[in-house]
Image 1 (cartoon, rainbow, N blue to C red):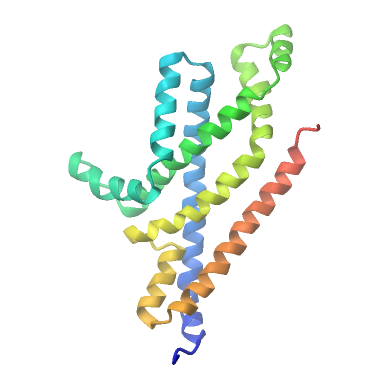
Image 2 (image 1 turned 135 degrees about the vertical axis):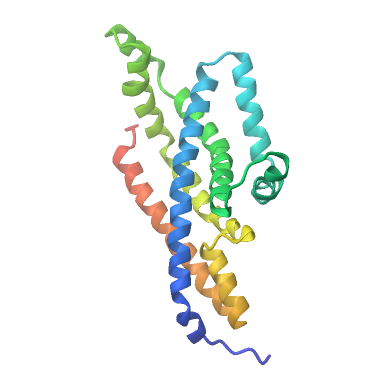
Length: 221
């Protein structure tokens, strides 16, 4: 083998890796926020809705969860604009796709959390005269979120890692930055050898902070 490791060229373009990581975190944060809104809304609709509503929510969850994210990215970015007269950039397209994709997973996580709320708490809230909206805000949601924190943490980290797929439509996040460095320096091993621990450390840091939050608000057994 004549290949010799040389990380000097990678460090020269470290600004691209840093900018890519920051963009990955930005994409993840925006997508998770939108996905939480989708997931919570549909989870409430499933738990409190009629049979038709539950069927519609279940259909969305099953379809999205069983279609590869990569295919959804292509359909949203290349397919939808050819069918509908709509224009958006790659960043917007990917954020929308990841939000819809993440929402399907969060529906199940939050639905399980809502259904795990003890009936006794709800009955007690009714007994002191809380309205349905007050019961939702002060009893059901706080309890459901605390119950769901472990699963939410795993899903959030998974969605952060999924931002790497944005590179296929030239969104300049971390994986795209590593690919750019590889194509311009021909240092494939070094480029991905640096990007990989960046993902690892960042993902673990996110999980560590969420685990601290989980322990802080864990429901005592």
